Image (tube, rainbow, N blue to C red; front, side, top):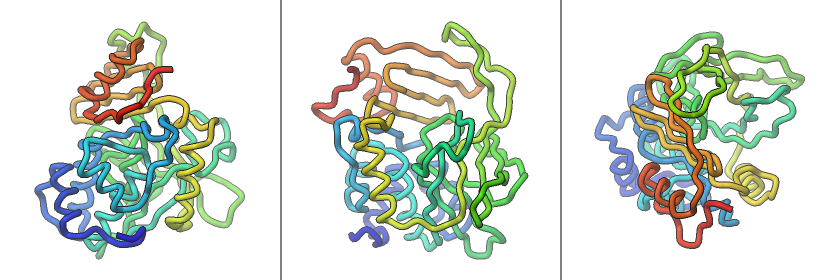
Length: 291
């Protein structure tokens, strides 16, 4: 396949088997929501290729080989490029967007556009949907949300909303926010969640970005020595029962009731076992997880 080709029928069948989707294959909102959630619950987020010094390929055939036909995951460009290909094969219109990850930022302008998100047009729907299966954070979307400002959406146990924020450009700036517990000090041994608050995740305009744009961004994020994705392993696994996050040596488990447990991984063999067994990631040969 070329970079712009849709999935073959065999690719689509393999993708649906990988994510466990046995529902309808229609170009409608129900299929979009169902496939989005199935993808989020099945394919892990991970950056083991950049940690090994390699920029992952975004060619569709390579993404199918890695994420679909192997026991691997990927980061945002891989997940959302793969997901976009599947949606287009179903007959949905997809626009690639570049977003600024603003989680924890004092000013949105201080963050570059390094995240990939998707705008999905559903036939007959009054407005497009924001879809994103590649945001490696506890506040990620598990189901797409309509592009509607100042409306709270509840899906798969998470709460999100889209708001507008002022900025200097000619296009409206959209911000995805999630409602979650603010972190409280604790010993990491099953602490209770703190008081909730709306937290901005990323900001974006509706300007379309193309495959060559993400090839450049992908290479920069994977190879720049200052990039967090090139310096330490980062993995996420989401199930209905829990959210697992490995950030360097720090492993965080967030249960569905909001209870958080944390611990440090201190040995290479332990980190490899956790990724293999807890995240269901086949760790590539030669990968060094703890430095």
